[in-house]
Length: 276
Image (cartoon, rainbow, N blue to C red; front, side, top):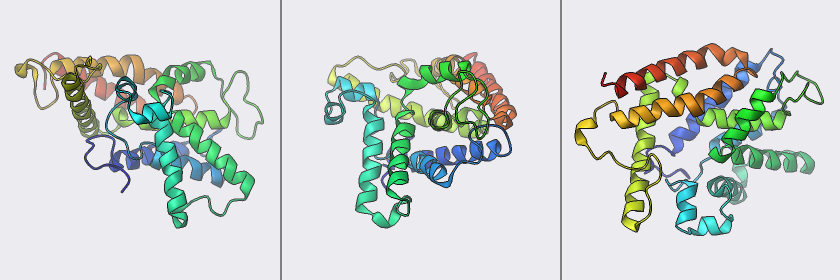
């Protein structure tokens, strides 16, 4: 109920989808040497709670928009990961208001504090501003073996890898069924276009990907050609490096992720060239 149904993309269904993606990654990690295998119950609960809460009460606009307009949220959080800080704070406010819904109520004080710290770190990791750092860390990391107190080589500690997992899950629709991926992409475009309309009305520069196409003949059921080109480039330059680096930590996901990426890239490339 805390997810605005008016949002085409950042709504409760998206939160459930991200939760499902986190579950898939954990399941595929079981039995491997990944540090995501055999998570303690409180860590698993923290991951799943963060997935459910990561876009709580999303206003349907970006961090950059909030900062550019001097929104009270941007002032409160000093222009730094504004939405991510807001979502986390709202989630814990909700637990205070509804103690019966608190998944951490049975934990001792020390573990409860650790769980809260972990949830905060996980949700902050969904900020796209951290994306490049995550890709670089994954590319530099060696395999992290289960039970090791420290990662081998320059590897990642378990909680940082959990944060990257949540970000990976947050952008996971490109390797789902093609129809679902296209639907989510068009929903996000609708949300971006709505923001662009507000920016235009306020006399602000329209943010990247938020400008509606000016030529109606470029539009079609699969998205206009300009949008298709931007989707193909975004998948190739931004999403694919994260996905392919992450599945080194969870090899069981590799085939599904690669197949999905190739299918999505083929779709957007074909659309950009005037195909169906």
